[in-house]
Amino acid sequence: MTGSAYRTTAVPHTEHNTFDGHAAVYAVYPPAIHLHGVTNYVLVHASSHDVGVYPCDETGLLLSWHLLACMVGTDHTRVLREAGWEREEVRHAA
Image (tube, rainbow, N blue to C red; front, side):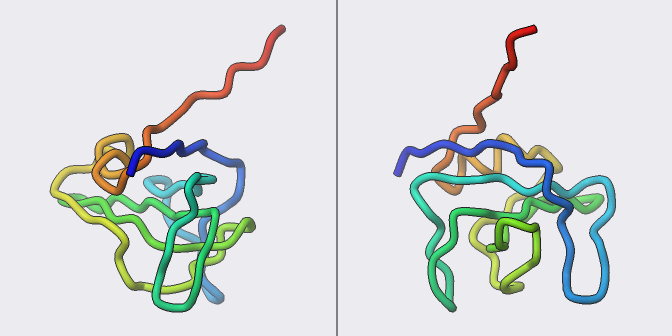
């Protein structure tokens, strides 16, 4: 699968907490299929030794702790690519 991932301004969170500064929400196409359905958004969270991709909604709410992808390191771009999405940058004209 080759798709696209765009970082959003949504704040990654669970029902009870927000994630630290090493997490971000990305809009993805094609959508991510997970245990409870399909979503167009994923949460990427990097810890001190690995980075994981989880399904979330458009607000950044984590839908499941079931990993869609995981790898050693902290690079969001690499783990998104491993999951099948190329990270794209949106540039706004001044």
